Image (cartoon, rainbow, N blue to C red):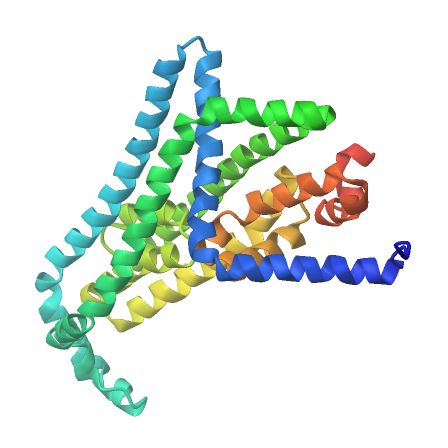
Length: 348
């Protein structure tokens, strides 16, 4: 039997790259399953930290668990109430703005016709007919979202119920095979909590900016729309449109098409500044990641796991960084993901 020949360095590198490509392709194919589970794990880590904090405050395990679950379901209920309440509010107000819409359409008709757009399509009856014909697709889309939503909720609940025992199992495994890495995994959970804090700060800036913009334009319920933008900012891609379309339509009905364009353009500018400038900078400074890596991770994980991947892009990148630090062969990946030496206070 011939002895095994050692692999050359280029061959090892090519095999490493091929393995990464295969893993990423598998994650991309299985993203409808992996994305909700990954998001549930992310939520379970956050609420698991709350559970541990309540226990440290002297509460019994059962009481701490009940308070954690109550907090989780309260947040879900508020979230659903805001979305459903805003939708019913919009539907209730649309008939009162029908006359204003027809007047504004009449004023904008010459410009729309010059652009090759039929203004009759924007009339209220046409919009109702369009929604009626699209009801099947919209219902299927909402059904898919509802299924994902309930999968996330139930998976998160079961993970929270197993939080104490599962954490003990992980600590036991790490303590047995890599006793020096327990603190590193604890640090990962703390960084996830820091990410939620950063995300909340960024969404707060988005909500305040939206409320001020709508106040200047003269759109009604500016504070409510700003609060809605703050809440929906936790939803990637879809959250922005859910937050901007209602006040944009209200501006069209109430003031005119130019006001609607101003709302859309202004919110788009605010969203760009907050999401692609403010968020990478704050997240990079507080989470020991390069701002460029944070920005690229939004695109990368969004491509692999879809919208949920964008939402948990930073925790996933932190997990990759922490795992890469555990092994000598992959420590260079952790260095590349981290901040530059001049920005790292630990290298001073």
